[in-house]
Image 1 (cartoon, rainbow, N blue to C red):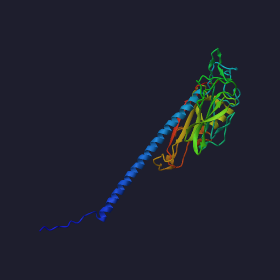
Image 2 (cartoon, rainbow, N blue to C red; image 1 turned 180 degrees about the vertical axis):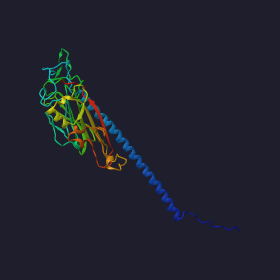
Image 3 (cartoon, one colour; image 1 turned 30 degrees about the vertical axis):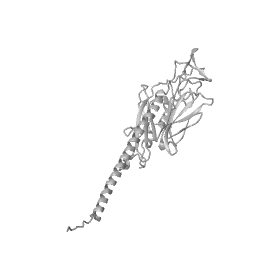
Image 4 (cartoon, rainbow, N blue to C red; image 1 turned 135 degrees about the vertical axis):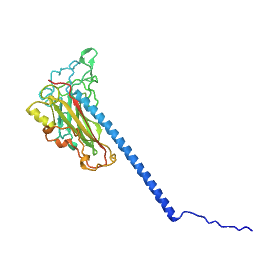
Amino acid sequence: MKTIQSHRQRGLTLVELMVAMVLMLLVSLATVGLFNISATSFKTVDAGQEMQDNARFAMEIIGQAARSAGYQDRTGPVTDDDLTDNVFGPTTIDAASWRIQGANNAQISGLTSLSFGSNNGVNKSDALVMRFFGSNLPDPGNPAVAKVAGGFPVPDGSMIDCSGRPVPYPIGSLDVGVSAFYVKLLAGEPELYCKSWNSNDASPSFSDTQVIRGVESFQVMYGLDTNSDDVPDRWISADAAWDVVAALTNWNDVVAIRVGMVLRGPPGSAQGQSATASENDFYPLGQAFTCGSSCGSVEDGLKLSPTNDGRLRRAFATTFMIRNAVQ
């Protein structure tokens, strides 16, 4: 007769179960942490690339305006009066129509004329204005005059303002092309705007166009030529330039501009915060850029010290030469 042996079922002890749970929890925490780091890195890289693209686009628009500043079409067809004998300055085309001018810590307003604000720039951002002549298509029947449609001259598209609008040859002393840049807030986000003049309209006026978002600081310095060699001898601020205009020379002696911006990404785009406050400082025109006493009263505007708000930030700067001489 066979004896039937009983086999008891065996399982995990409470200690073994707790150890397994702890190990699984550690693996889960490591997985979640790795995912968060990966997601944050992706957001940072994406924000950095977006800022690079935005800065490149903005500098291209501003550079195009700088290269156009002071341009006068002396060979193309005109409408009624040939204005090329006029120069950009305080007593010729208009009382304030310099080929280039600016203001510190200011915004730009106005529908029929430009007005600089006073101490209302976003983070002490500057305002920059550049003016130029447009160019017309010739009339097929009379190439010496401009083609007209709807009572307005037809631009040939070779000269455009900061909004992308083709600019015709001016039919009046105020109808010069204008590309003006400044920063203002929209729903709490600082944005770079361009203001341009639309002359081909029943009611000509200035209009705003958004350029890029996230511009916390927009700074401009001006290279002044004092010995007529078309090379900047010193860099001055807009405040100092106005003082110089009144005492020594005029805005037409500005032969170069240095433009700097600080851009910021969306919330949570920064992977970590710097350990010290000084490491969070940003210099729109570059930390190595100096202008000494020529900076006037805006030297503190050349450094931005934002709070640790989890946003990625980058500074971008470049220099443009003003190539159209005004005599």
